[in-house]
Length: 313
Image (cartoon, rainbow, N blue to C red; front, side, top):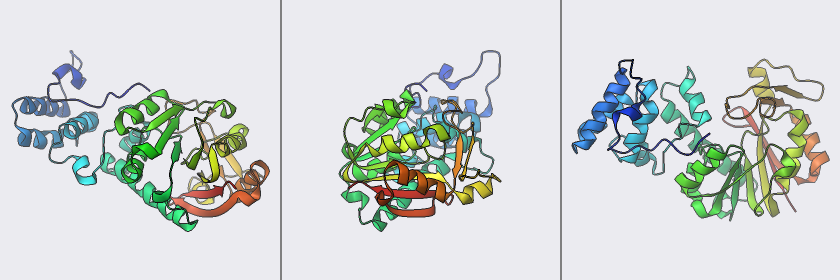
């Protein structure tokens, strides 16, 4: 993934619209050209109306969204949600929403999904008496391009949030767009260098992608990033997810397939994993000690991922 390419301004020219010289522009590209012209003429109302139509075309959805957001036009999600709604063109998670047949409004679904994640995390932390608003420092690990980060920043401010990902552009985009701290992860768990320890390490949907060879190693490595008294929160694909996908777990309660929604990471390193609760509890016990588990909530995130909360004494 590369540095942010999503922001466009009202002075952009037609070549940025992605038209090939030997092909006529699509309906969406024509609308983008018209919207850019109207912006150049200072007609913000007309531009907002035209770009809203371009945003409904799949091939120009993100370009139109970027123009509406960066020019603060009527219809921007920023005005509705009160946070930075810039989306990187390299965001695989947004690409998943945009390409999914069930998503009739990918922008809304993507942004609302991050808000939903925030509310589910806050409920989980309330259950263990450690509210998010009172957490001095948060590391969002395997953070991607900010589906959740933007919402976390709205609640805590950027100074309390650090992100980490194995994809360089994801970290760069989050730092530039949301003002958070960030550092590169690594493919090998033992090679990650933690800049400091954190009051909360939140690992959303990483263990739902790990092969057996690195599952426990990542648990151990992430545990090292938690400060004394702090929490490690991670999620897994549990029994409900396995049954929904018609997956048969092995005798340990584990299944792995070398494929995922990510185009940036090798499938054998980051595929799709399913784990029964006994598998997860056994890995916690042998890696960081059973006593570290203070709470679990099955089918907690997105109505299909199990959540586990560990506290470091």
